[in-house]
Image (cartoon, rainbow, N blue to C red; front, side, top):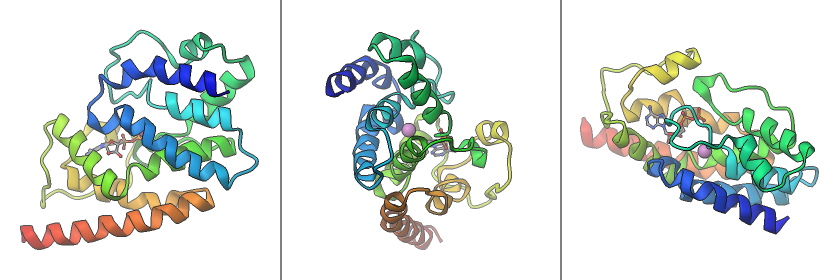
Length: 208
Ligand code: ADP
Ligand code: NI
């Protein structure tokens, strides 16, 4: 199993290194650490499926122009994954994306772990850093006090509008704590969430 995971990581390295700092290989490595913590508390999960899904979960991210040829499925074939592993990994990845609150329903504990692990990296100090890195890469404003956070939107509305980064906290990041599924993920989200609230209060104080 270790060998297949290492092989997979080296396959995706070049892909993520072309993404901006919000979705680079360090993001993948942090999500892996989060997933490992959650895995310890979820004996019914399949460790190999979870770890491969973590490594591959952003390969076909539609926010990024595809700069590489391989699909997730091709990468799984390249590392010698069986059909059953491939199906389970693809299904776990499908439910990862938030998509403006339009996430697909979870079909397994494996998918829940990958999604919680990814969402933990979207909040807290590292979540703040990533949001501004993403906003910077897209030329977004830091904040816009005139802008209203959208609470109900379709996936394409969510993707289309170029909101300021602070608005993104209200449209997504502050909502994630309540959307965690695993017990350990929920526990880990608590402190990170509180830190974002402290950050936003301080920011408001400095701007006003
Ligand atoms: P998903 O792929 O799960 O639907 P998002 O598209 O919301 O997730 O983005 C993943 C990460 O990228 C966010 O957690 C955040 O760090 C960054 N990001 C996405 N959209 C924005 C935005 N409008 N402003 C700032 N950061 C963003
Ligand atoms: Ni991710």
